[in-house]
Image (cartoon, rainbow, N blue to C red):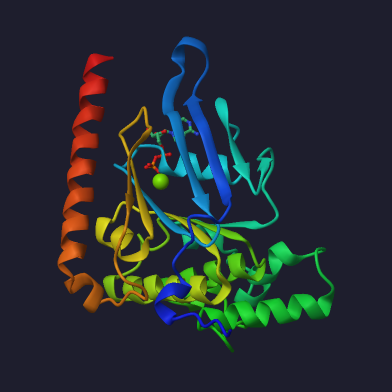
Length: 281
Ligand code: ADP
Ligand code: MG
C-alpha cells in the first residue's frame, strides 16, 4: 500500500522521536563562594527531533545563560546538558547559534559571503563549501548579495545573513536567542515565516528564545515558560494550532488568543514571584 503524508502532518513532531537536547537539573550561578548569585536553579526539559520549542521568560531570567550552557559556551555550575546523547563539554558540531545582536555577530570588514564561510573554514573541501554558502544565502533570500558588506545592508538583511551562517553548517539544531528583537515589525514577521520555512525544508530542530509572547505562540509546537531568577521551568505548554502557520489566519484563531493569554498570565506570575524572592533574600 502506498503511504502519503498530508501537508498538515509534515511539520508535526512525533512524540516518539528521540530527544536531541536534554537539560538535567541544570544550575548556573555567577560569582564565587558567598557572593555567588544563582540564576538557573534546576532547569529540566527536553527537545525532540524536528520540534520547534520556544522559551519565554522575564528579562533577566537567564534565557541567554541557558542557551550558552546548551551551546557549550558556558559551563554549568551543576547538572548537565546533553546533545544527541552526549554530555555537552564543548560547542557541538551539529548545533548552530544565532544571537540577537547581528551587528556584533557579523564581522564588518568581511563581505556577507566571507562571513557565512567563516565557520566552514578548514572543515570542507572548497567545492562543498561554495555549494553550502550558495544554498544558505538562497534559503534566506540573499542569493546574489554575498558581495555586500554588513554595513551596506538593512538590519533585517544582516539578520538573514547571520541565519545563513548558521544554516551553512547544516546543523541538526538551531538555537536562536531573541533573534528578531532589534528589527522593525514588518521585517520581524518576514523573518518569523522564514524560520518556519527553513524548519519545514530541512526538518531542523529549533530552540528559540524570545520575550515576545505572540511570537512564541505563533512559531512553536511547544512553549516553555521560565520562572524569574532563580529560574526553573514554570510551564510546558503544547501549542495545538494547525500547521502550517499563517500570520493572519493563525492569529485570528480563538485558540491563539487563549494560548497567548495563558502564557502572558504565567509570565506575570513568574515576574511577581521573582520580585518576592528578591525581597525575601
Ligand atoms: P535573559 O537573557 O533572560 O535576559 P541573562 O541570561 O542574560 O538573562 O542574565 C540573567 C542574569 O544573570 C542577569 O541578572 C544578568 O545580569 C546576570 N548575568 C548574565 N551574565 C553574567 C555574567 N557573565 N556575570 C555575572 N552576571 C551575569
Ligand atoms: Mg538574553
